[in-house]
Length: 293
Ligand code: GUN
Image (cartoon, rainbow, N blue to C red):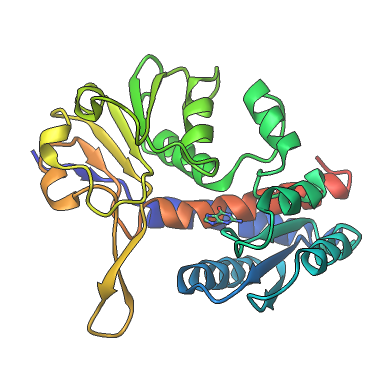
């Protein structure tokens, strides 16, 4: 069997069309505004931030991009965040992670007004998410859920195995999928670097979500026939002939697609969904600030 390819590119395109219409309809009341803040010159972060701004622009969202040099002090970054907390044109503030080592990431994330935290990383939003309350959902986990739902994958009662326990993906996606909600109600296992027998778990999965950050880590002999695979990994494994970064997921796509019933590719899987969910959160935030939500 060769798997159905779950296209994040196509799904994201459909959601972006919906958002573009929504932004146009809102235009005489509020123009959603997003600022992205990048500290340093990490090439992957640079390309993510550029993609976020390009998408915002295409949807009619006002976007500002601030790039600071790698030596920027924590105090200066805090002052910048505060400036945007008080800027009425801006409804979403995104500080691209990771930050340089001399900056305390938690301190910066805590400084963002939770009502403008379109990344869903502020402890207030994380708490609301865990409790199942209304909040900004973190973009990658939200994108994974939307992708499953819009692809018609049944999650209720499914054995979901998540590989990777990051704050950005693993922990929130596991938490959301066990909740009583759309793309939820699953039985969730969260595996990580100290898991004793990883294969025992991955082979049981009806839905396998991999966010470990290790290129081609999951092979065909670690999954069961018919599994649905969501590959969150984006690993740079060299250059293409045209000088672009060559990407690989955390899943060995070529072998696993022969065993899975459905699988996301890299690129073109979860990546476009993450950016789209950021836009969705920004529009939602603008609505809330304008008293329209
Ligand atoms: N770095 C990797 N993914 C993300 C993300 O979703 N948001 C931010 N702010 N930084 C990231």
